[in-house]
Length: 227
Image 1 (cartoon, rainbow, N blue to C red):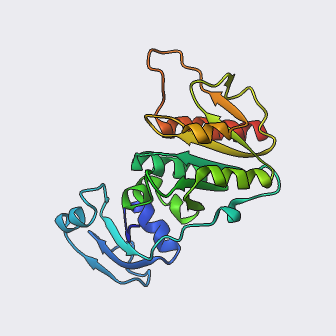
Image 2: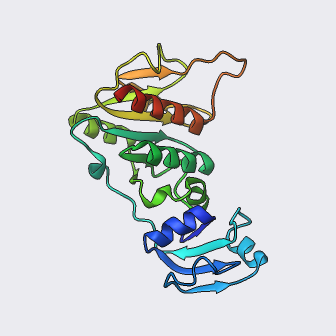
């Protein structure tokens, strides 16, 4: 897992949470009185430290992110957990974590193998949301779903083959929302654990949405229907 963050939002959220070990900046006017160790440096150095990412003049070495446990995400009523089944794009993971945090999701789960993981690019795309969102890495999604069902969770998968539109079921229940991989969708075994499979309407010639866009629509639909 990365020990660096870059970009203004990620930098200052890490600063707010006292996780910066050492900072590298183009200008120190915003951090002179923050009580952190830092160095004013040049853009070339920041480009190198950020892997040519959009650092906006801020790069920091940080304390390692602490992943959460699934048990810490469980609620008695109206829980909402997002599970990612084989997601491969770091930008999608970062965007989903950001959306999930903004929407009040209880946690994001992904598997430990054949899947994207939290790194510095994810942290940048998440724009500081990683400081607040519970993220768990598990070895077996199916076993995790079975355990969540014991705690009263219903599993809603998103797939183009779904017989119901995403807004045709009630979400007045503890919900695990599954987002499949960008190319293959949900795996067969995970799909078999779904209580509902829903789809988004597609009126154009392209038959699928970006995973993070689909996740955003589905997450906020659940929030809207619970209001």
